[in-house]
Length: 276
Image (cartoon, rainbow, N blue to C red; front, side):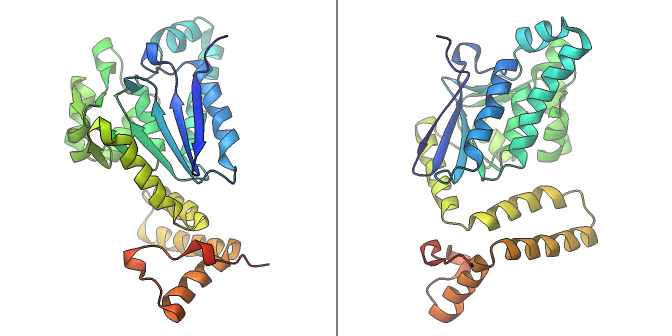
């Protein structure tokens, strides 16, 4: 039986999802892209999943698009095949950007080219010091397409984006963290523990507030201040309407009980009673 291209396990409300083509450095194929959409569907509204972690089996996170399966074989089908493959890959990247749960990229190894798409789609990213990042497209005569150039322009300074795009050179985890391509970098043998600790911190937060906040960060970036202000006021109103008990409980524990300080941690979710 053929091995699944994506695997996952759920432990303590954390979904640990892995690209599973280690012999291909987890390069994304049409089959993998279709399976990723299925996995996103399967996990998004499960009550026992609070955080989604995306990693890779073996020594790579993802080496980008599979040049043989994604390019040569789909291009042989003409424009129809190419557009279908694009919809399948960009579709799950987009779905991941707006996912219901907070998402963490656990970059354990090689992250190349098209792999920057899901890297950007995840809300947070922790890399191994040993991980390697690169845009190799220039080395074989194309530009970083499929949104990749937009990713580096959004995440990096102009000079660093130019360097990665024009040289095709590699950077490792610590430099990726210094350039803010990822949040931080830790030794590989500490990577899973660090990601688990971060996920556990997110699990302490109100899930409605988490979804509203992560969407807001992505939405307001390209807005004027006035547009962002209006959006955020309406988003807060919508979140309160959907889960008013969360806001009330946080204020109650802070003002009435004096059991927590917002700047030092989260309120106790176990005390929250849902509004009827």
